[in-house]
Length: 165
Ligand code: S3P
Image 1 (tube, rainbow, N blue to C red):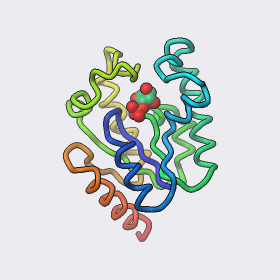
Image 2 (image 1 turned 90 degrees about the vertical axis):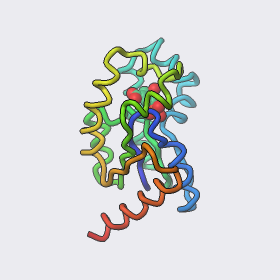
Image 3 (image 1 turned 120 degrees about the vertical axis):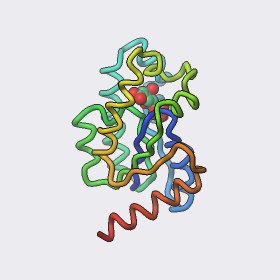
């Protein structure tokens, strides 16, 4: 199991697919499973039930996915906000894909499907989460400039080093 965390736009899905292919395991995305279970897009869950209900569902989905078959698992950017969700990650290899706020906005800034992006404090959120991601992570990679293949390779090398030490 490898878990990917990072801000919206960090490339968790793209890099996660590459990692899964290399390792020969399925790629899973907590956002996709949340939408399947809720039968609605994330934007609609936020609008109809609010963020706390979304985070509850997110917690349950991540717990189930971590309990399931070996995979590469990309988490939604806000999954690490809750302490009980962070606790689920304690014994799992976690890679933090770090990108700057400017790069995140360049990539996904206009995306209507990501309700957190319309918040007025999104820059602050990015700064606060940087520390939380880093703390939850086994390894951190710069995901802002390198091609996704190189990021995937770095993650595997760093995780192997971390395991050996
Ligand atoms: C969120 C990030 C999204 C999704 C939801 C909330 C966040 O996932 O889970 O819109 O709080 O940062 P991505 O990081 O895959 O965009």
